[in-house]
Length: 101
Image (cartoon, rainbow, N blue to C red; front, side):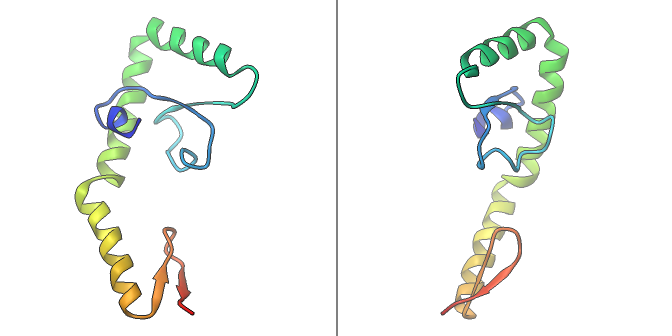
């Protein structure tokens, strides 16, 4: 899904913690459960019938991926984590620090 978003394609995800951090409008989220298949079909039909909407969602997706998942940004997060481990701290994704035991 991340690769497709990076290519500017609209992606439909089942609601989950993993996709909760994607900005609104950068993907389509559907509820998990009994109506999931029907909701997926409805959204696929909507996107196929409204190519301008699909392009807007895809454009927002590509921008998000370029900004957050770019190699430099990801490498920076890894570097910060490694550096904080060397200092006796573990840095959480959201920027909060936890002291190592």
